[in-house]
Every structure is written in C-alpha cells, then in structure tokens.
Length: 248
Image (cartoon, rainbow, N blue to C red; front, side, top):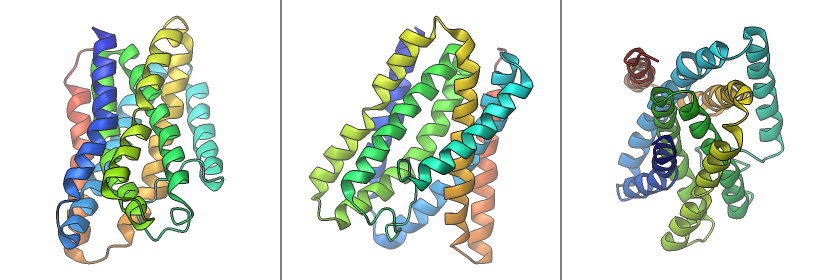
C-alpha cells in the first residue's frame, strides 16, 4: 500500500508537474506571467508550510532536536554551495545568468533535483501517509512553476516544443528511482529518515527564501503584493489543513 502511494505521488510530482506546466504554456504571454506569479506565491507558502509544520516537527519526533535543527542549518548551507556551483538552480526568470548558460545544464540540474524529490516523498511516506501526502503536495506546487521556467529556457535555446517537453519528462522521471531507492534501502535504516526529512526541509526553505521570494519581489504594486501575500498564506494554510486533519 505504502509503496503504491509512493510511486503514485512520485509520478504526480514529476511527470504530472511537467504536463501541468505544458498546459499552462497554451495561454498568452500576459496571462502566463500572471498565472506563474500566482503559482510561485502559492508554492512559496506550501514549501515553507511543509518544512516548518510537517517535516521538521516529524523529524524532531523521531530524532534529537538539536541534531535535527543542526542538520537543517547544515542543509541550507549545503544548498547555498550547490547553487553557487550551478548544480541546483530554481530561477524562474528566463533571463537569469545561470539559465542562459545552456539547456543541457538545466536538464541535468533538474534531474538531480527530481531524484532528491523522490527521496523526500518516500521518506515522508515512511513516517506516515498524511505527511507523505502533504510533502508531495508541496513538491507538486513548486515543480509546476519551475517546469514552466525550464520550458521557456529550452524554447529560447532553440529546442522545439516537442523536444522541450520530451526532455523535461525524461529529467522528471528521476523522481521514481529516487523514491524506490529510499523505500527499499532506507526502510531498514529508519534512524536515517529524520535526517533525510531535515535535509529535505532545508531544501524547501532554501528554495522558498533564496529563489521564489526574490522572484516575487520583482513584481511591485499594491494589487500584486496583496495577491502574492494572500496566495502565500493560502499555501501555508493548505499544509496546515493537512497537518491538523490526521491522527498520526
């Protein structure tokens, strides 16, 4: 049962996100920008909510508080270094200096990130099913705007729509082996799961604070700011709803 849920939600978080991103690309440029801005705002809330209301509390329940918090801090520093090395990048601006380097670099970085997403989803389900659903929801919410950005970069780099879609699907499939490796090899070493959750929470916090929020600040205006704030709170509220409505 748990394995089936892990595979299902890993698929939704990977290929499902690519398909969702591809559907949004049918809108006009102006509507697309508004939709992306809204998705980024909502995704920021779900990432922060999943990290602080789901992953970190559950990790602390199954591990030592000081060690878990130290792992989160180390994880944030690690992701800072990784981003500096251009291994993991989540910029949603097609004019970004890193993204303009090369399409293949984006696909490789995306595959690595999706592999980690698989580990995150499986580790959360191994704690309990509600946490797995909550974590998967946060993954899906931030993957859709990221995939839209990746599509835009590949198209500007000369890829056809068909190739851009195919390559994004292939890189997204890295989520499944990540999830299966975590399920089959880490279930026997349950002591490692709280620390995987802590590192995962660090990645969620880093993505939200270092990449998504600065992107939101680029769009000014009272109406835009209010919409961003409301959607961010709605994202947090969604995670809070899932967190409060289970007994485990």
